[in-house]
Length: 217
Image (cartoon, rainbow, N blue to C red):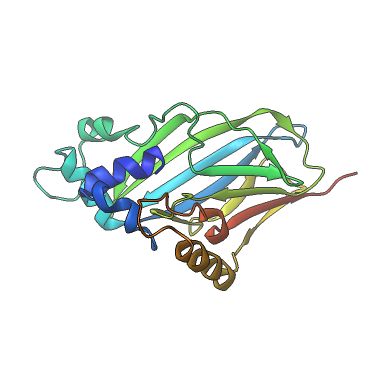
């Protein structure tokens, strides 16, 4: 289980059964992706938004002892305590975000410039991740946000946009869910029955994607 899913599982108190109960997501995160470009129309990084579902948000707020008057709002001091709660990652953790071009993975930095807010009973956090160097999009850029174990479900309901790139456009590509479920069912059926086994890491097959295409001279 990845570090974010593990922390959320601990919040819900279900870590002990997490490996056998992940056929469907337990945490739902509405996601927004923004690809940021420099003045030479090269992609420099991603601004990622995560909006946690109501139940998860309530569990996190309660676990941290925030909003004790249950009025649905946080004071500036309480918000400061919440800021960065999901940004302290283990070394090497990919942050459930994967970028590639022409089938080749693109390295992303750790999270920076993060924010958090709590509105309408939902926690929403943002963070910035940078590419190792600016990238000219000679081919479409593909970005997916997913938990390989499917404990956390990410959905691009907050949109996919580009900034400072008038010659580039973004679209959301939906997965073939029937094919993904068939693959998952086969992988689960193949697991040994007499020993605890790692849950099939097929989150990518269920993941929505952002595809960014730029006009080239």
